[in-house]
Image (cartoon, rainbow, N blue to C red; front, side, top):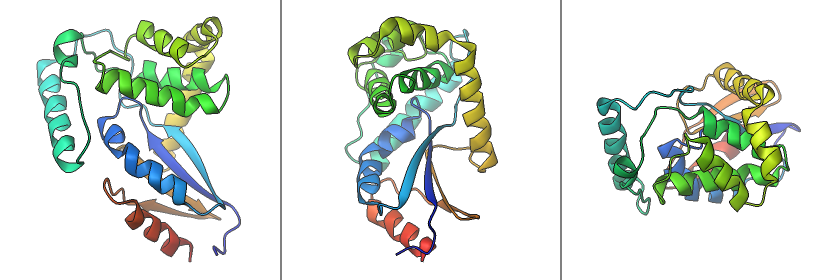
Length: 210
């Protein structure tokens, strides 16, 4: 039993972060097995600001190589490389982040539903979540009020909430995603991410709290 009464595990991510996609299965197992007294809080890190510019060829190559590296390092992770031919990639993840916030406004259960919808659209269906039209279609698919979602997606207040979360991530010392930060009392620990073994992270968290 932990000696800390208030314990929070922050999960810092971006819905268009490919390593976060690879981490999904192991993260789910970790979260499921955490002690009941640990509160999980999701924080959007915001990988890339808004941009209308086509993604430079160098960045396209880098990201495709990253996808291949993830497939090798995390068995079972799949990517649909048709995305690079079918879509017009932009280095812009803020729209997807705002979509998560806009979805969350209609109920906390929509936080994860929207993240999963964005990831599947991007990585398995070769759709572009940098485009608002894609995000609106996904909102419809998971059962959100579309008129409300579209309004919230474009609202300045949603952008401010995103910037606030990004600022909080920086305050926690996080620059790369995914990241796990454990806060207990006035103490803070960075939990090393193990992409293939949830028990390793669970043991680390237990040791930290003991």
